[in-house]
Length: 492
View (tube, rainbow, N blue to C red):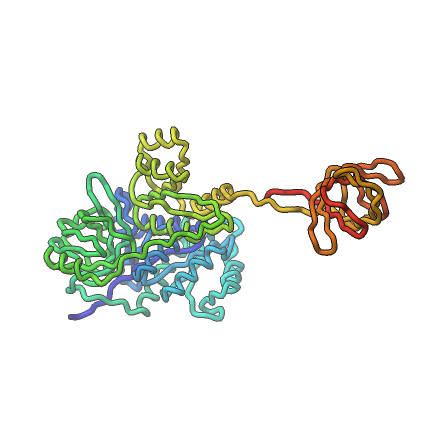
């Protein structure tokens, strides 16, 4: 069967504030066929843009995912998430830690990429300085010691975006992407969702073959007879080919983001494929080592499976020496009463990303005092969870050394009270301080300074060299040569 060229699937990645969403929005509004992108009402995190390159109109599919965490989740399941990546770097800020993370994900996936210097219209934008930060991060640009192509763009004015899309298509041509349009389709699940009216739906990215009505899609332990196909604009289509996003409804269970799919001609073939499916189920998450730690239980709810995967991945990365995170449940859909009860039973919190909270669930959460944290930006979610972890961390009680003295004479002892002569060694010694009694290297006992005197006059503290008298309360006899170390307990 003949293979023919296919258009690229492109992921836009980088630091959250560096213009990724603005770039995707501008391309959607200015390059989507017939300008109908503004009429898209359903949530489809992929769209097809059209760009004229060297006199020929060509298509590019853009993935609009939560970011490189979702990209990682897709790749972890074996999905070739994208054929080409655009790494955004803001011209006014240069490379940030998330830029480097995104770049490492691109390199790990062995995906060719283009650098887009964004926000060139802003005051303070300095593309040359941003280029230097890229080079310092180890990304070697074309013409500056490397081969990575780049373009300077403004998502506000549109300047440079046409050149950026030209570079994407040139990179595509070098990759020689191809597909067999006559084959049964295969690809990966970008995301899935559950809707009371539509049932379980999934957005598929077709990498090979053509999806047609009447086929049956199989992915993991899920399948769906293809009664109708919708393109990214929500329009019905009899068939969709390579590199196209396709929405299919009617799955028996919720497919997971990143799972590979294939399609067959009949339901019987689908059932046989499900029985003999050689894709292994996801390994059950291992319990965090909670010994000696406080536990922060989480219930995660999001709009689509891709978001759930991304958030779960972020949570697994967050670590604290005194707190262990535990995901009680993670799923797609609105926050419901059951989620509140699950969180309440474990003393946990609910994380809601791009999803609603049912009124009954909100009322129950208020009564049961279960926090519900809502987010629309994944990195804000990550920062908030880190803050909550820090708030939940049990305080560690440590001793802070205040000062030290050396005992030179014991004058008298009455019960637990000792009158002593001492020589100042270091720090500051004050009336009321707790002290440790140290003999050679042995820690004998704790005590308390009851009184301090210099030249038989009471003083509140000692903080300069010299000898002085003091009264200490201690159950242990204190002898010349012993050291007394003053300390206090502090919480960190």
